[in-house]
Amino acid sequence: AQSVAQPEDQVNVAEGNPLTVKCTYSVSGNPYLFWYVQYPNRGLQFLLKYITGDNLVKGSYGFEAEFNKSQTSFHLKKPSALVSDSALYFCAVREKINRLAFGKGNQVVVIP
Amino acid sequence: DAGVIQSPRHEVTEMGQEVTLRCKPISGHDYLFWYRQTMMRGLELLIYFNNNVPIDDSGMPEDRFSAKMPNASFSTLKIQPSEPRDSAVYFCASSFGAGGSSYEQYFGPGTRLTVT
Image (cartoon, rainbow over all chains, first blue to last red; front, side, top):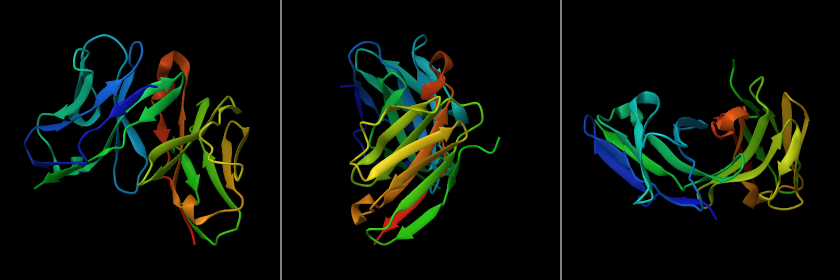
C-alpha cells in the first residue's frame, strides 16, 4: 500500500530561522507526492506537489520541497519561518487514481 | 468563487439522532470528497464522487453512513443513527480532474460534529 510517514509530532522553530518538515514515503512505482497545510479551524490548503521533473518543487507562501528518491523523502522547507506559518502540515501520496493517503500531520510552532 | 461551502459549521446532537451534513463544491469541479478528521485516526477518506457518481466508498465506516450527490453542486453525508464515536470534524473537498489535477483538492471549512 502507498503511504507516507511524518516522524515528528511537533516542530518548533524561531521566527526567521529555516523550517523543515520531514516526510518519507513508501510506494510501488513512481510517487505522486503532495504537501497540504491546515490553519486553525480551517480546511486543508494545497501547498505543492511532485509528479515528475525537477526534484526541487516550489509552492505557495515561499515553501518548497525536495524529492529525494534514494532516501524516499519529500521534506518541506522554508528558508525563513514566519509566525503566521504556525499550522498543521500534512504530507500526502497518491494511493490510487484520484485518491490521496495523508500522513498524520506535523504541528509547526514558530516562536516569535 | 466562494470556495467549498459546508453547512452547518457546528452540530451538536444526541446519540441516536439523524445528522445530515451538506456540501457545495466549487463550480466546475468534477470530483467531490468526504473526509473525517479525528485526533486518533487523523484524516480519513470516507467516499468520493466523480461527475456525481460514487466511485469509492470503501472508507465509509458502516451502514449508518450514507452519502449522495444528486447534482453537480450539492452533496450530503448522512449518519443515522449517530453515535458518540462519530464525533469528529467532517470535511468536504472538491477538485477538477483533468491532467492529474484531481489531487489538488480544495477543502471546505469543515463541520464539527459532537454526538452526546
